[in-house]
Image (cartoon, rainbow, N blue to C red; front, side, top):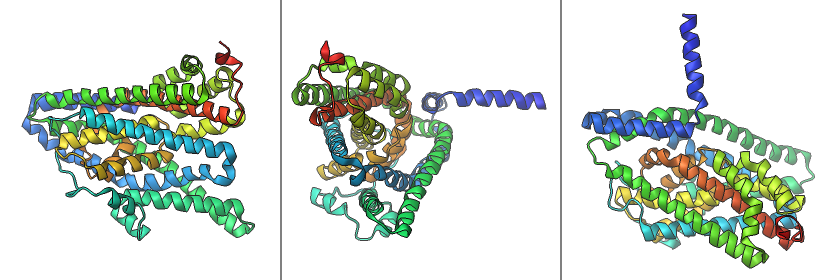
Length: 426
């Protein structure tokens, strides 16, 4: 018995040593095999897949509330100063541009068009106008917004409340008020850590959930559903390439800084290749900071603030991923997105990126949030999990490149970069 338990323990440890995104991709492959080999009887696995989707829905609101409240603390105006205002402003601008590029190319190329393979229908029967989207940002009752899962209103209130609480904490002389505000932020931080633990558990079950979801959805269908994922990867890769070349290299480096894009790429190559390899902005941070100091010659007072913040709050690659994927989801469901829907998607993508963790797999949780806001079935999450290892690599490389581009520009704007040394000297 002891030998058996030891063997099972070693087997489980070996299973757990494989990154979760790869296990999800393997589960997808097995689900496809079962769907095409077994056929319609595989639809009996649907309840297991539905349970996975319900677990995802369960964690969306608390993840948004805790992660945003914890993230907003880092954006306190009193703590940031001039450098911080530049950094946060530029991060917001580049993320918005990334979302626009993603939506623009997705609408032009229409990934997933002509292939309908997900069950369930979109929840929004009538598309909102841009006016309704803008007015809908502000909740008349935050508690009602929480109860109804109105994500865009929840995000707005949490950000505004968090900034107000941060200002109170920075300005108050009352020890009781200071202790109370600090406690709220401490609870948010603890809640965020607890939610990440819960997310880990949900994603572990997701290995089984994705298998069941894919097997049930593809049972009795043709191979076109699988090939459609290739169009999703292609459009996202193209959008990220356009964003890196146009936004970072041509506009920021060449246009605003007045330096060679080739020199910038030489200075950022270590961070870019590391980010592509390990799929984590946070884990790449030591390499990114080394490139900023030794290669790009940025002053520590700039990169010491901009890069740690960017590793969690600057998610241009994620913005592109979500923007393209939500159009893909609308296409495979058979319900095109109106302009008002896309404006809401762009806004929620930019706002929710503040609290998105810079770790592998975070993109799937963010996708759940965006799909829910768009009223689209979460079934798409199970299919996107199959290509998440690819999408995660290119999106993370984009994020890190953006962090360094913004840091370089802020260094130029504040006189905190030596453009006569490092890669610039070559």
